[in-house]
Length: 147
View 1 (cartoon, helix red, strand yellow):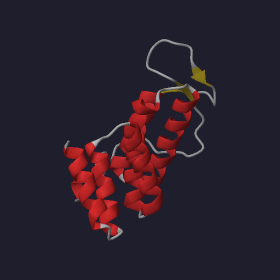
View 2 (cartoon, rainbow, N blue to C red; view 1 turned 45 degrees about the horizontal axis):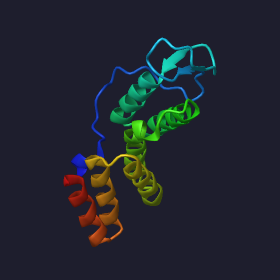
View 3 (tube, helix red, strand yellow; view 1 turned 90 degrees about the vertical axis):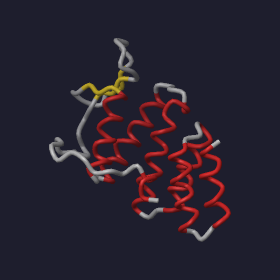
View 4 (cartoon, rainbow, N blue to C red; view 1 turned 45 degrees about the vertical axis):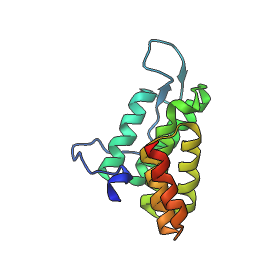
């Protein structure tokens, strides 16, 4: 079951995460001038996703949640198709599951599945259903993920 949660520890050589760090976000890694001005540093959505993933793997759940949510906000602002970042919504759900926020995690995972059906997201939703003593729901999601 734990293999499904996508939360594997890694890097001890991370720069410290500051919640009040100001950045400018770019909608894509191309040379467009589509920036969100928030400060003095420029960060692409790809870089922001990678930073959130590193924080997630390092166990900084709150820092990763902040980065993923900032990513979602920037993606929405730049009209990135939601299906393109369904994995991010799934990662938010996995982090909320790890924190024990089952209702919020389930809502995030279901939203992710509605955008793009990913097996890991289904697996995490099955874990939530097991913790909620919903045997039918727990069986439904892994089966759907295998289709």
